Image: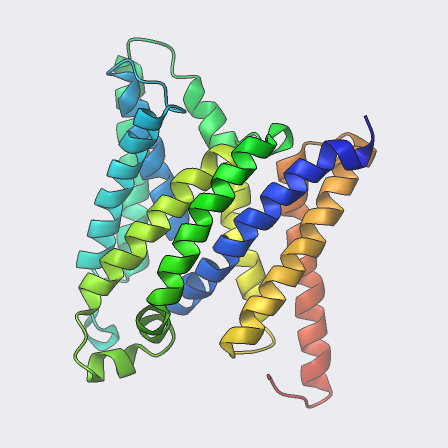
Length: 279
């Protein structure tokens, strides 16, 4: 089998994931809730583990329902614990970390009581992107298209709250309600992404492209463009290197993204040394 035949489906899956996750990453960086996807992913894993208690396979539609129900709980917690920046006694990142730790511990306890081996959860967390099929990619693309339309319709609210929080407060918006809607959609995206890509790669798709983009601009359109282009390059290089050197695909792509971030940082430093400013 040629490299193109083997790596084209994983690359297509990467591009579908990046199309949604790099956009959400802009919100995550702006809101300073960097590890929210890890926390929601762990809530999804807890839901999938809990499904085993009822003899439900995590990869089944009912299993996804369990995972989505638990991420909804996480979304509610994150929305309700948000306060104005000047009124915050505890950083929201601390709440996110606590939810992650408690969900992880609860997952271990639930798995210990599961009537069957919970090895399926390992697949959920590690991901199976190298063996993703075209039907799975099409289903993911359809679901993300719906989520993309959802965020397009609500883009003014979500982007204003993320990038210009004081403006949203001045207009009297019910920010916690809008946060819940945002995190609910975020949980849905993560629930579908983690079984395919794994936690590490999903976190990378979410954070690294957005960080690269923020190094050079604050304009929303350019942020998205830089995020998507950098992700396409890093994913293609990582997949090609994985095939060429027979290395694990997901971890290698993560390392390529790390190298990309170093190169972007060096380029940003070079532009600053020349006296140029952000776009």
